[in-house]
Image (tube, rainbow, N blue to C red):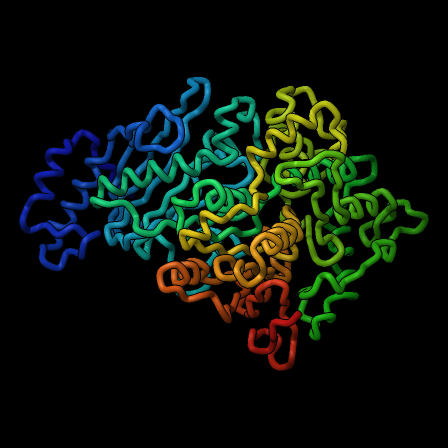
Length: 562
């Protein structure tokens, strides 16, 4: 059990304890000169003194009415289930300007063995809950997993922080978006507000804020990481953006387009049919990289026609084939969506999914739902509803039209008519497609951008397109000095796919920022059964891993090639 300390202890008690000659604050050099009991008491006192503390609005760089530390609880090294060492768990609320808007709920974990640095965890979906800041961030492709020997940032002495994005709810429910301040918080403002709240808390606890600040997130959190670099470049030294929803407006429009085909009469593609499709793709394309290993390593070389598994007469006759309506669904997902208007930063298209090169929409039941009937359950239910449907439907109803009576199934994503202007305005607020990283670059910031080729929620091509636009702006070599882009064959969106790859991205980023050591010759390890433990080189785009001989489970048997 974690011991929750009373919040009534005064700052005066903490100050007296800090002044005692026998105390050495851990953030300034450890406890070597003090008895262990004195160190524990000091940590407990400094933690409990934070409870109830107000954080003035002036300390937060965007408009709020201040913030409050709701609780501050010392988690002992010996507490059952705690593997992070001793730390102070701070929960707080950041208050809105509009009294109708919800608070931002945040967590800041303050390690006793503070290393002077912080990691801001990103969220996902519609957010609504605080990320697991006591766990592992999304620096790999299997949610919550790290290779053997890689400990959590908190265990390593990083302050960890995150927020619910500005509302309490589920990643499926976007009803909060009817409020302008809640929408702005979700779009990106919560990043700055949470960072500044955490910096104030850290300065109070340690006497100074963090020397280096990192942001790590995947999906919506990957978008947030790019927002941090684009809009708040002075706050962060390093970013890991994993499978980011950078063009989130185009994403929900594309998801809506796919949903219209998926949920049309006869259009639903079951997991069994998806398995048959994947098997046919693998039979044709698996060996194109030189080895049959269950991974399509070079999707651009894979040209698959779904009519190869067309049911006789185009009518659904079972699990081993696709009807014409189901082929239409897959073809829709496998083609780009072109708009008759421009989104933020001049974007006029959203790319296709690697439907016919390894992307599995059925390896994660969240994507297309449990059945055609369950897919459209609103508000969304984890394990039943289709995220493609609920996310696009809620964005349309609540963020754009502010009309809960609308349906994405009766809406043309390519030509939204009178709603186009509103979509453009929200796109400017939410999308992280800007190539203006000059301030982040000039202050020495570093970015690791990475995406899985088998991503079933956000197509890898979205990150490729963004990277190519960055190259056009900065040039290949100058860009490579502050941004590395990795594509991982077979990797999906936190689960599923054919390669659940992970590596110690935080250490790679930290070494780049603090030591100037560029990430090179990195190896990524598959942590998902049945191929747990196999490795591949992490190839910097546009390279991909080609088999050259030897044990197909070892990265040394592959070379990165164009």
